[in-house]
Image (cartoon, rainbow, N blue to C red; front, side, top):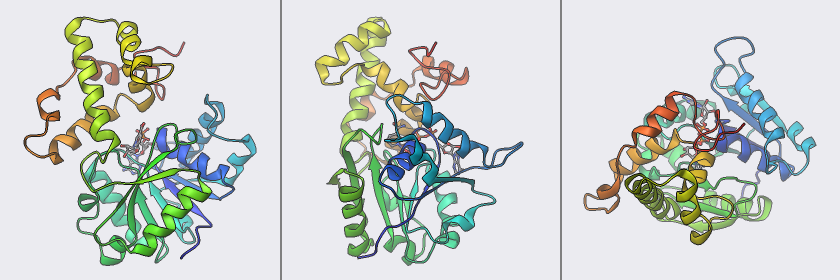
Amino acid sequence: MAEIKKVAVIGSGVMGGAIAAHVANAGIPVVLLDVAAKEGDRSAIAKGAIDRLLKTDPAPFMHNKNARLITPGNLDDDLNLLADVDWIVEAIVERLDIKHALYEKLEKARKPGSIVSSNTSTIPLDKLVEGRSAEFQRDFVITHFFNPPRYMRLLELVVGKKTSPDVAKTIEKFCDVNLGKGVVHCHDTPGFIANRIGTFWIQQAINSAMDLGLTVEEADAVSGRPMGIPKTGVFGLVDLVGLDLMPHISASLLSTLPPKDAYRDIARDVPLFKKLIESGYTGRKGKGGFYRLD
Ligand code: NAD
């Protein structure tokens, strides 16, 4: 079984940055790459993510000094940083076309035999690896972390038809022993287990709140603690996840779920979401969302 001594995370947003922090908490060096910033320091996006993590509550780092284990970079200039990486975690936007374009780059840049995984919330593995080489498919799995990654114990693991058993074993052991996760094997179905149920619940709760004219606070009071979500409810959860992720999740599920899936009956556009996203209110990662940060 291969040993994982160095990790890269690609995408330094809500999940990527926090996954990098959690790997650093395990004492493992991490490369954190994002798209190149248009002006000034081209690695500013990944660097900014580390700065934000140091101020986030609850703390993603066990000790602030763990941030030193993270090397930030950008995907245009720093692909060479992947040359000695044993596991690459992809945590970029939830769009199949964008993930495909990244994997094409990774085919050439990754160390031969290194493991590649996606943190996708909904996209089946079979679709992610479409068009990729036999070697890439052999080394590929889905590792679906939950938000916030330092605190949520669940990790959904999806192993593809062509994934090597050794890759599956290596990643399962690393996530269990080094990252302290409770690894649950999932079938390669849209939304896997948690999001197949969770997305349905979120959509239905939002629909009901809108139809009944509930305030955000009223909706969260009935959808939070009584449903086992401490401290918040459906709208607070959407703020944590990121409002802009929700339409991508919905589009992804609608393009992959079976024709008669019940989610199709309740999925609907919420104009308020569009308005908030367009004004920068993408949730905690932006200017706030349904709850303001100031
Ligand atoms: P995010 O929007 O916060 O961050 C995405 C990052 O990807 C950004 O930093 C962005 O600059 C980068 N990016 C955009 N286009 C890119 C490209 N072409 N190449 C490389 N990087 C690019 O997103 P997120 O919420 O962290 O979600 C990332 C992944 O994790 C998605 O697949 C999502 O479904 C999944 N996920 C999210 C959550 C959550 O709670 N937000 C939970 C579990 C899984």
